[in-house]
Length: 240
Image 1 (tube, one colour):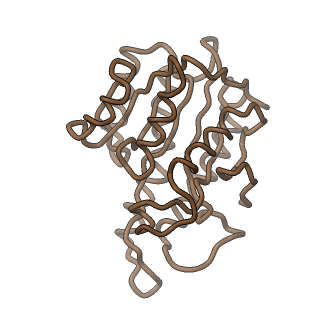
Image 2: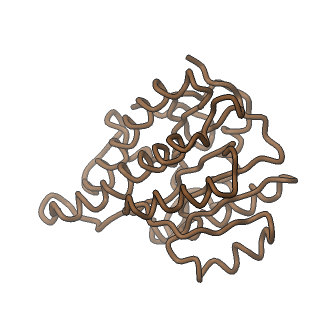
């Protein structure tokens, strides 16, 4: 079932991974929309002064480690204590892991990357949904998870086994969440940010963070049916 469309404007956005890579650009662009409020989950709240300065009272900063189920539960409890409903969830937290090829890949790197990139976003949604913060009578919710074309089975190359597998994993997790939560007023979608110039890409890339984030927000705000889909920053469909 197609979930209800979130009406953008003066919304509450729960955002994970705000201090990594292109995330500050997400915060800038979300806060540029009048009335928007961000609940930011960050691993090191003491390093979030720049984020707080962007939005002042419109930004709530909470500690969050997406690799820890205990941390996720505590984060969700704090949100529940101050918020009746979350309009948008952006799962941006994640890790690349070590750049290991077939000759060097380890089970430890595979598992730690999977926990952060695949299990973390699932448990984020679980924690918020179990507290009645998503969809339902309070209004629709949009859950957007930043994945990667590197998680596409059809369009892939070699190496980076941990990262590729973790992104393919979160893709199927979110597709299943879309099927389960759609009837409850929750839209679930996956985003490919493009080949962005960041620390993660070691300065290589085709687009800057402002272009990437602006494009992804355009996908989310455009009013199209994005439920259960995997879409790039330029609105192109990414093959599963």
